[in-house]
Length: 305
Image 1 (spheres, one colour):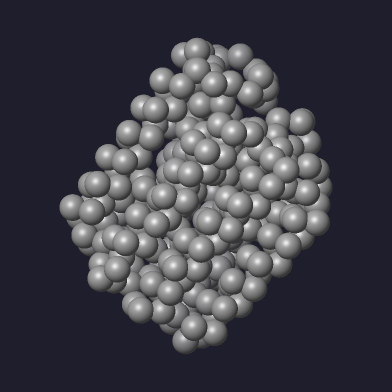
Image 2 (image 1 turned 90 degrees about the vertical axis):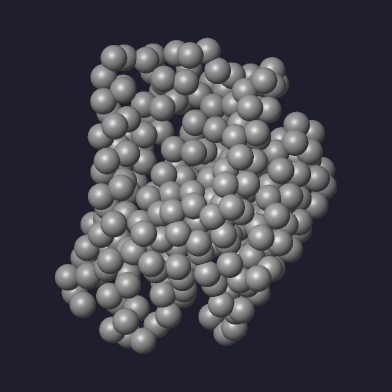
């Protein structure tokens, strides 16, 4: 038991470290390619910080641990837009604009509804997974073609040749750590009689969301509000379309009825956040506290279901 707990703590630290390398190197590479800063925040940075969720979910799917596979994505998404966004809003004003809300916010809500429909029979088939991945590709193409920018400087220096090997090292560390995390979490779940879904939606989800948390806070403290919230929105879209889509292509994902209820709660939560971010084009400290409390309440509901 102690060994598994130490492994989980160690792998979470490695996930954060590996994701930090990925974010820094990927951002510099993207800037070298001349991509707009808004696109970097919604794609490269967002996808890079979602690397832990991708590695954990795919590893769990390959190990036939569907509860952790789906639970990690659902838990990470509610953690990203609940705990992290709420905390960021508490520490500073989170600004939104029409582009982020109507294009990216709408894409987030629509993705949640599509995922809910795809799981209506409690199974996400390989064909449905391919559709999700294609939707993600389409979304990325739209972003790349978009000329919209937020006039914010992305943290980090200029591109150096060693950023490419650093990116490879970061991804390798994330994948290896994710495998150990899934194994240790499963062992603890079995020993305590806790369901793997609960482990995936809480401990594993929070641990794999550390990169998003760090990135959004850093962006906030430097006044880069668009990058801060854009990272969270992009990460969640990638989680639902890219991560679950890829995992289901490898092996169809099956969930229980109670797990489906969690997906319903997630979809409703996304709609609620969309409305929240539209009011005044910002998320205030008070609203941040409300968002955090709702996310915590939602987790409590999941434990009861």
